[in-house]
Image (cartoon, rainbow, N blue to C red; front, side, top):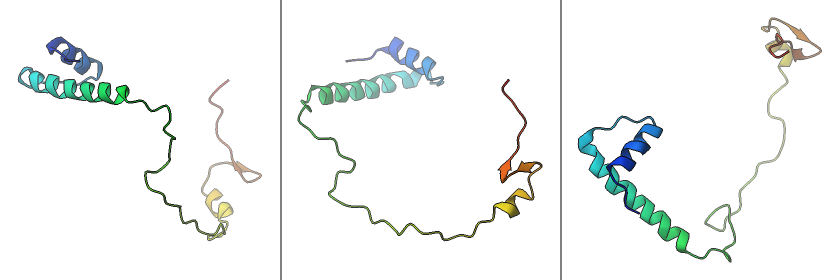
Length: 95
């Protein structure tokens, strides 16, 4: 799919980008190459490909789930303008 000057100007307008007139041919070439690559990738049959979270067979090292900090809620809430039962009170903004 080859993009022309009007396509590039329309894309730039939609993306709210200001591009100079002398840069439009280069943008058209680069965007056309990207579109060609997307077309090539869409042509590949991926029906039997299993999705994966990571390209390498690795497992994540996990740390033990243990508390490392003390509860400082009461100290933090001393700075709040209004609290009640351990919760911060805020003005109602939606009726």
